[in-house]
Image (cartoon, rainbow, N blue to C red):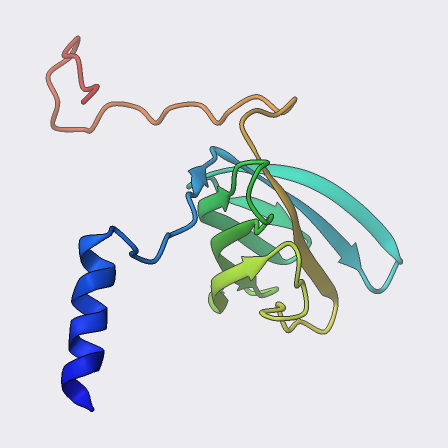
Length: 147
């Protein structure tokens, strides 16, 4: 029985019948919505990849934001890190992982006061990008530190 399966597998491979992976598109901006459960206020905000923004006591840092072409089944996802800042100033990581726009409850941020969910990944934003950091301290003055 194993031999016919092997023959079928090799025949399909020879014809180019391999599984097709959906193409993903990397985006520089993640669009979020946040709810302050105390005030009931909902805020929409854009965050650039590797930028950290403050939403209440939470610091949100998206690391990757992917979408698919319009011809594919839509699946928008973001990999992010969320830290909570205490009143004493200490920072505690409360979430690291993937969040999906089409399933906001799948990997929800578990917080008593704030809810955050992904709306979309975007190529641009009305919000200006974060300023580039200064040159490293050990770089010579006037040196070009761009990679």
